[in-house]
Image (cartoon, rainbow, N blue to C red; front, side):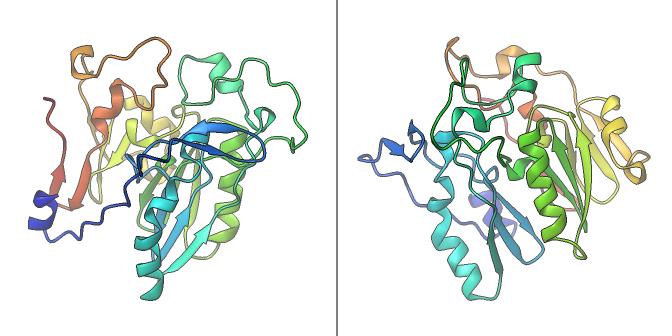
Length: 251
């Protein structure tokens, strides 16, 4: 945080998760609550608007609540504040096709969907981290029908203000493990093949290909742990200015 402040970046912190809050229950499910560790995932900032995105994991359903004081402060100063439709998230709400056909994709471990009184079919589930923002253009990664519906919503909601470009199955969800805009012009990419998924106007941009990560640079998990990131998280850097890019240093 001190590094960011020295670069004249305003730093906000979410509310902390109280120790007494261990689970959340809705009409359709019960889940453990996780603290707000990755706040960039659950909201999208476009221009003067804050958009809360519909979660893909039940344990993160109310995660934007920890950001409410920050959002309210910006709203009081004139920012727009929108919330995308919230899913019921029954077992049948999830499009499991991508997870069943690949080894990737953070999703609920649903093996036998069954039926539920609140089934409404596939629903909007999508993280703001699935979006690459480049000026007035948004490149949106879509791997499932759960992702496609929020993209439709964005197109209608932002019509006339931003242009939406769809990247189909570039990765399982978060686009920032595959491509990051470092500044106007250069892109940090996982491989040259990423260009095939980008809007045509971006395919001739300068591309810096990241080296293949090693396993010893990634934490070890148990077989039954829910993995919220992958080896390729190393591409996820932060550009704070056209000539300043911050990255993490492995311990």
